[in-house]
Image 1 (tube, helix red, strand yellow):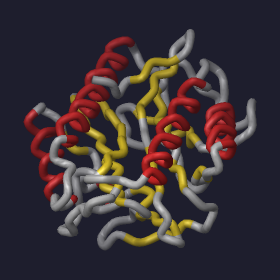
Image 2: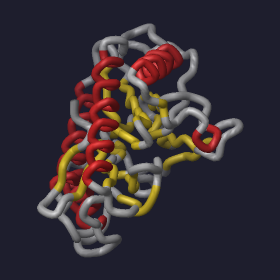
Image 3: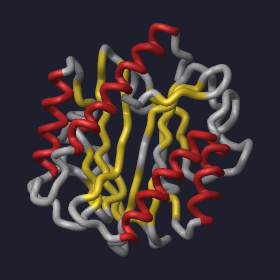
Length: 251
C-alpha cells in the first residue's frame, strides 16, 4: 500500500468512525430470535443512510453487505434466515466505503445467556487484538504483531488461526501486507508509516484443523472449526504513523 497523504488519512478516519458507529448501531438488534439476514439489512440500511456503501456486497461475488460468523464459524459467514439462539456468540464484520476509503472493523456479541467458556474465549480474542495493535511500530514488521498475538493466546491455552489474517487497506479493500496472528520478531513485511493495516486475530479453543467452504457465485470462502468448537475474532483498522499508530475504527 502507498503512503497516505494528510487528506487521505482524514478520509480513512471518517470511514473508520462510520464503521465503528455501524457496529454500535447493530448491537441493540443482536438478540435471541433475530436472523443474520435481518442484521445484514440493518447494517446495509445504516451504511447507505450515512452516504457510504457496504464494501462486502458484490466483492468477488460475496452476496451480502456484512459477514456474520456464528459460534464455530471463524470468518466470512454469510447471513441467512437461521435465527440466533440463546447462548450463541457472533462476530459481525463490517466494512464501509465512504468517499472512496475503507473502514473495516469487527466485534463479538453475546446472544442471551452465554457460557463462561465462550465469554472467556471472547475476552482472550479481544485482548489478543490489543496485544497485536500494541506491537505496531513504524518500520517494525508484521512478524512483531503475530508474535505478540500468538504469545498471549498460547499462554492462555488457546490457538490462533494461521491461515487467515489481517491485511493492508485504504482505497482498496484488501492489499499487502498480510498481517498474521503468529510470527517471529523482526520477520515479515515492514510496517510503512502512513499506511493502514487491519489487526484481526481469529482465536480457536482447540488446534483441530479448520474447514473451508465455498460460497455460491463467489470466490470468497468461509471457514469453520472442524470439531465445531467456537471461534472468536475482533478487528480494528490501524494507521501506522511516524511515532506509533492510531486506531481508525473508533466512534
